[in-house]
Length: 223
Image (cartoon, rainbow, N blue to C red):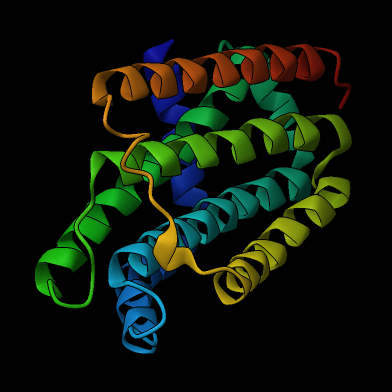
């Protein structure tokens, strides 16, 4: 099954490879350019950098996942044929989740390279930042994937567009209206092992529930 999932994920990346190249460039340069335009007197670099890290990650995951969904919607017969092969419906569903997390891993590696090249502009990745970002990406994808399978991309895309457009706007509003310089998460992260274990456990549970729901929906889907 692992080999089948890898083949399906590879197929998705090949279908949207031109968009992958675009997002690689965006993931590398966007955080740097956005950091240079910030007002460091009102927002600490550490906080602003963390928000930028997630925003660019969020756009990358949704943009590339969207591109695959559009391909699947355009070539519905291809998906129907795949369901008749040994790959099976559940393997197809599982590959969608793997695809999203590979984007996450790829973005983290690109950002790590960018932070090495531009150490003054970008913050370094921390386990807290990675865990929170992974959790937020999991929630978004674990909600959107079942929606896409149930209603199709054409209907689910409105939810996706609201998330893409609304998240940066909401982040900007929060940063403008609240004094984030007083935000202190040190108490939360004092117990590192407990936080990591709880966070990873919650992410796993969310994914398991979402995968089960997606499999049920996709098994009942008619092409």
